[in-house]
Length: 364
Image 1 (tube, rainbow, N blue to C red):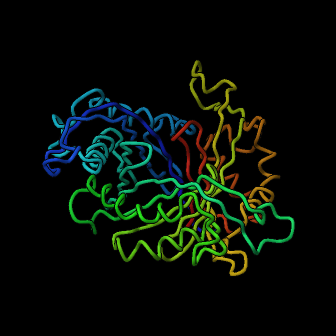
Image 2: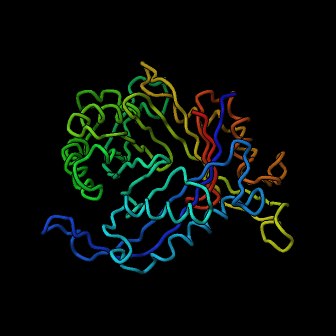
Image 3: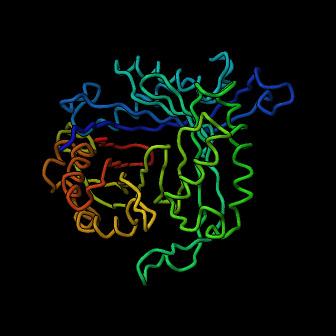
């Protein structure tokens, strides 16, 4: 089995106002305006899976969330100009990273700041940042090469999403103004894709999510050399990402399951039987099938994973080996062990206990 990395994810929000003095004189960002910011933090466990900043094994997600909430609390209902010289999304990410590291004595592997649900900046462990923006278009398509009877062979439609990521180190100017640049780059593609039948567009005769992402990459990259990846969401729970060298798809599952953590202190509610509406995301990587145009059929992922899903959904998870001991950390490892043989393309498992808060296991 490949070497794997376990990490924990937490999300915290705050409301704040700002104005960006460096913006052009007539730009809207110079005016005082506000956002409901969302900050996402990711911290890896040690190679032996120990997490010194959590009070007990199984409490890592809650401990990280509490530390992140404390780190952003001084910004809540404030004017950010009073705290940061240029309160861009990237500057906020660096500020929160420093605050969180001070509280936990551990450097985050990643910090993301989302100024809206459709845009943000992600900062990695090396301090490199990527700005992203999400768009939507409504279109029809059919997949001409699928087996007879496959539902995707029929003409149908989706509300597609497209997320463009760009490396800020390769952009001119601020990461906040980069949103405007992404908008300009995207505009002609939306005009071409929106309210269209994708099969009619040259190069999209077999418009799978993977190939749409590839098609966009080939056309956007010459206009935007800073482009880092294109992600296409076909539904709310499935899609594909292309970064110029490889494909990654994902498929989401919802689990309504019970759990308990017996290492919690007496009187701690987590020691009792309780539960979550978990969201599970499987990430798969692999070469593109030259006939079907996909890495693996989303429907096949669902069917192959069904036996594992049935052991998790509407079940007491604490009856699985080790789950009472380590909670979500043990659960993502268990899922990998159960699904690896039937889904050899599996490369990462995300498990969210609550929105934006959970455990991630990856091995690529």
